[in-house]
Length: 303
Image 1 (cartoon, rainbow, N blue to C red):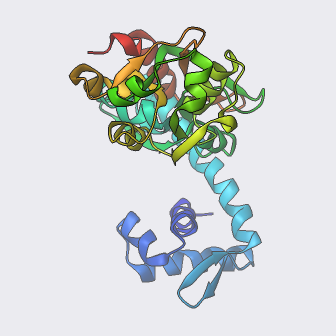
Image 2 (cartoon, rainbow, N blue to C red; image 1 turned 180 degrees about the horizontal axis):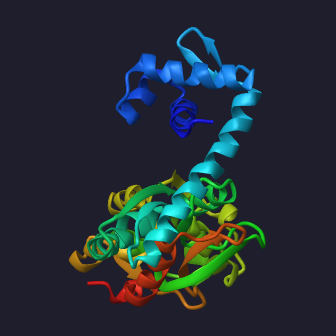
């Protein structure tokens, strides 16, 4: 089976489009179509159904794609390991990051890592922690950096750095709800809340549990799926929120937001590197874990 034809097939599968696959591989659409047709003839099976302009994988196509991913991984791994023997760290590294690490913490460190290992191609994909872990379990990512532990025993979690969270809000909300004990204040406040599946939400649920409260009992004004959107909603006064200090650092320094310390509300968690135990880490992935462990600082120390 020709690896070039297999790659053409895989790109059509991923993009659900012959033309987009051609652009990704810098090949003409007729060439992509010919590669896929040759594979179908070789295998004696239809790999895609063409429904109007839609391209839908058949069951045979799904089976072939699952094996193609493994073939590409083995090929890349062989190249990486041979280069590693020559003291070169190379290859493509599919890296997943939950929203806070991917947007606020990793970029500067990935830039320094790339300068040290310029032959590594980093492919950073962003989602909430649960989404990144799910992609890890499906074999679509080699390595993830997430803010919570999800999934089963087949995953290995390596602590990287401590993250401090804070209960933050605009000053007028703090002044309005300052009277009373911590539990009473939490119940009365309107809330800006992350979605279930995010590491921030999991940490928040744990923190509220120390006060004998559950998130579902709170008055939610808006649910957001992105740490940046959460910070902006907090600054607009839509409610209080529990988030990593790194996402609202500038607003806290300027006074647009304030952090409220409530007794009994313990707010700390860790970011982890996560990978599948049954997958052999490429040298680039192992080097990146070592690099992050050596260079990441607790978020309250980030300046």
